Structure formats: C-alpha cells, structure tokens
Image (cartoon, rainbow, N blue to C red; front, side, top):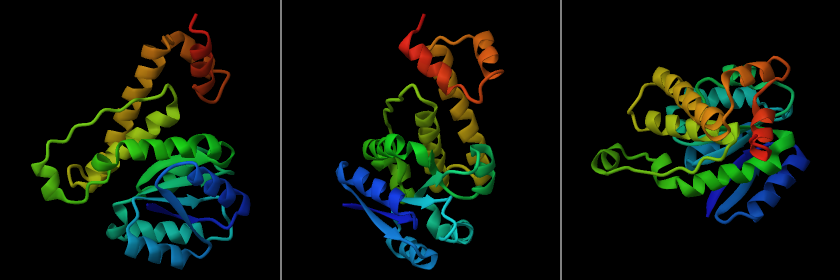
Length: 224
C-alpha cells in the first residue's frame, strides 16, 4: 500500500480524494489539517507523492511549502497541488523549489487525479529513483503513452524533470529548462502531430480563448 498524505481541511475535497483512492489499487490517503503534523509525516515516511490543497486558507499552506523548499530531504517525493482562486502561471511562480507532479483545479479533481495515479503506477520504478549508485548501474528505459491532453504532457514533464534532478543528473536551474523544453516538445506533438493544428489556426484560436485545450478537444472530435 502506498500512503498519500493530504494537507486539506476541506471536507468535500477530502471526501472526493477518498472516493478516488478507493477505486484505485495501492493508494491510501492520510489526511492532515495541521501543517506541522503533515511536514513531520513527510520527514519520517518520505512518501512518493503528497497532495496539498493550496486554496485552503486554514492549513497554513505558505508555511508548509517553505518548509518543503528548505529541506532537501523532502525533495525526493512529488506534490500534487490543488488550487481554486489563482491562475497557473502565478501559482507556478509561487511554487518554485517544490517538486510538482501536477497542478489540478479543484473543479477537475475527479477527472485528473485518477490520471495522475495511473501515470505513477505505470512509471513508479523509473520516476522515484533515490539510489544514485543503483541508477548508474542500471539500464534505464521506459515507454510512455501520452493522451492528447496538455494535463498529461505537464504531468510527464514534471515527473521526468524531477527524476533527473533527484538523481543528481541535472541542477535545479536546469530542471526548469528541461521541463519547458520537454513540455514544448510534447505539446507540439499533440497540437501539430496528432491533432493537425496549423500555426495560423492556433494563433487565431488563442486570440479569442485563454488556452488551447478547447481547440484540441474539438479536433479530436472532428479532425476535419
């Protein structure tokens, strides 16, 4: 059983997480409302994944994130960040120094959290390597099945950049660069490869919409 610490005082969100985990093998949530107890758990259990409700005003999230950023011992796992009243670019700036697996808007929790767990189940051995000696002596390889969705592209990019960083194969600054490059590569493959979206079509769509997700979905439904 893989225990997943959750820092959240929101009863509805906690119930949804519990239901999601009940339907997925090998994940058991452990709920915390106190930041000190949560950080203590991270220190002693070193879980592969944790969930933090960033929009929870009662859980002292900022202090929790500072504790995680300042302790290298806590950098081996990854965090799923739930958010509500903030845009993703601003959130990413505030989360610098935290190993992010995925950012999930609370309205999409039921759709996206199961996909995160699926990715982790499929790639556990390569993405949470803590022993550098075993890493260097092993022949690492892996196959990823990427859905035509920017969320999956971001999740894989986060996991791979965190893996390289935690294995001492790239520095902290290079992790952000690697993430951006891989994310762009994967998004190009989705947009222009799988969905056949032209540059002009994308430019015209983004002039009237915030993101590309709607165009991708419409192309998947009707590629012509």
